[in-house]
Length: 434
Image (cartoon, rainbow, N blue to C red; front, side, top):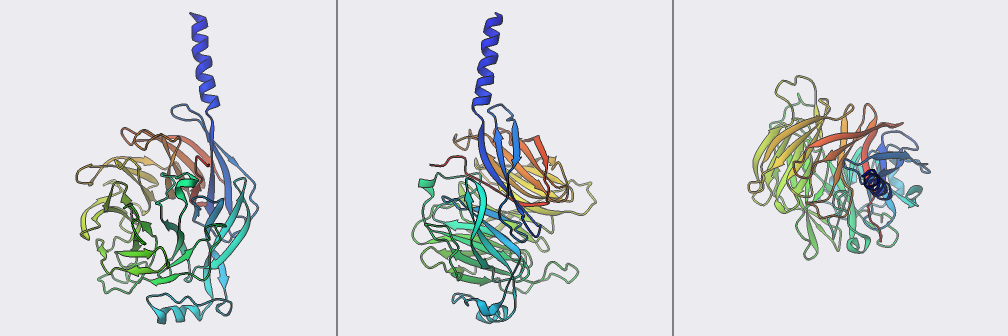
């Protein structure tokens, strides 16, 4: 009897300890130097998993990186560099733009902000292999577009991800989205950009009472989840300042970014910040609205607003801005973060209408949660895979992990660790490399 119990305990211990796996997490901060903080994230096979976040040495210095993204199959990390400055005399003027007058005016001044490509040696940031301007001041997001849709929650093995890829960088103060092609062999950012797109000025009813709106304010770009056929992909690009989401197309041969002039119009004063397509229905787009602290659901094909939901409890009277939105890879749940209420909202997605029902609001475990992402813990299909939700609180500062119930979508806090610098974005490595 006791011997059998001992064998069961021994087998459980072996299973849990032998199955420890590792990812690498890169915390992007707003510090002026040495500001990409690498960590190793390990976990066990226990349910919920036991997590360990271990700081690693950082060997590069980037001025205010804030957000980052990893190359789909090369050991390269890309960051915005908000603290960089470029003199126009040393730059090459891009030829592809939708507003040559605005580009010439922008080109005549010192450009504030850029992009960096950082080589990873054994998963540690080791050297900057390219550095380019963002062609607009205050870059606030860097995204990856290409022949395969890559997200932290849907990682691809190296041989599945090879193809043509571009970086997009949006600038908050200049209202631009610039596109850079990536070298397929080295991962370097090729210069000059293939396109500098200016969000057009739109007549609106927004008043000067809201100083953050009324002018073009680019904030994000999202690739459609539709399969890539031919040479072009569809991109959603929210303009926080004008309450619109642009439909753009990216030519995978030329890198040209074209406005299809078929906007999605958000509710007045909402301030769309980031967007996500439904993983199995590219006609459905979800947008988190920073200013109004809401989530909107759109029929992207018909360019119609289907519904808008309040992220905050009815009795909340404080100040809040919404930050990040993530759709679960199984298409059944959506998560959104609140900065001020300091929480993560959990929504259930109706599988016929794709509308939302709020099922929980969970404390973020800190103050001002800027970024959330879903991290798979194994290679099982999306409907059976275990996930954690990883979150960075900016004002605390700390990184918090939540277990994700794949049946209900509900979150359970399992881990919290203070970080030496305030976090903005999190870039998370692939689980399986070839």
